[in-house]
Every structure is written in structure tokens, then in C-alpha cells.
Image (tube, rainbow, N blue to C red; front, side):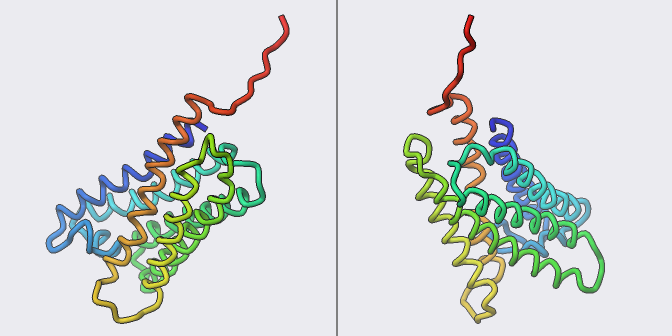
Length: 208
């Protein structure tokens, strides 16, 4: 569980750092408004580094979710929510792989992977919040996780709607991406703390 929390933190932080560095070295790009595809098109080697970071984000997050599975309450919601989050992590990694590809249909694949990741992560967080029933562990985490999932789903709906909005697709991506990146940082640190202090953990002491 401790390792999973650390990996959640690492997955998100490394991507935030790489995205900021890439945006700073791409003419006309900004951290807050440029789309993923625009950052992936950054001058060499930053575009490639960004794509690798996106793959790492999805891959590390998937491993982390498998490791932190047991930290959530043993309810049916846990399995459904974690599986949805795993799907979102896999779609994120797939988007990174597709960005590397120079195939004509890769841009369509990236959009599909992006939309799938947004829906799966948003829905996964909403569902997994109902596997956070223990108030000694999840008093603040449960509503935070529920709200985060709802915000991601709302931003994803606007992004996929194709409506002519006064904001760019890059801004809408950030509305979904920022809370999705913040959650692993906040809850990764929380899960590390759970492992360290082990609230509610019952240990069996062997007889002498």
C-alpha cells in the first residue's frame, strides 16, 4: 500500500513537471491552454519527453492502483471503481503511445483515448468514493474524491460535446486534467500516511 501511494504521487508529479518544462520550451505554448497534441509537437527532444511522460503517467498509475486496491473498504464499489480507473490509466498510456505514432489516424486515436480516459477516470472516482465509508480513514477524502470525479466528468462532457464555447479545447482539457492530476498527489500522500500510521489496522500477535 505504501509503494502504491508513492507511485501515485510520482506518476502525477513527473507529468506535471515535464508538461511545465515542455510548455516553457515551446513557442506560443502555455501550461494552461495548450492541448496535449500541441505539447507533444514541441521542439526536439521535449515533444518526445512529453509523450514518454504521458505513457509513464498511465503506466505508473495503473501499477499504483493495483497496489492500493486493499486500502479501500471491501465493498462492491471498490472493484468497479478501481477497474474504471485502471481503464482510464490504460487509455492515458495509449494516448501517449499514439502521440508518438506518425500514422494518419493517430490524431483521431488520441482524441478517442483522451475522451475514454476522462470518462473512465471521472466515473471511477465517483464510484470509488462510495468505497470510502470508514470515517477514520476517509472523512475528507470521500467528498473530495466524489467532487473531483464529478468535475472531471463535467469537463469531459463539454470537451466531447463539440459546442462552440468561449474557451479553447486546451482549456477544457485542463479543467479535466488538473483535478485528475491533483487527486493522485493528494490521495497518494494520504495513502502513504495511512500505511505509516495504520489507523484501524489490526495486528495479530503471535503467542510466545
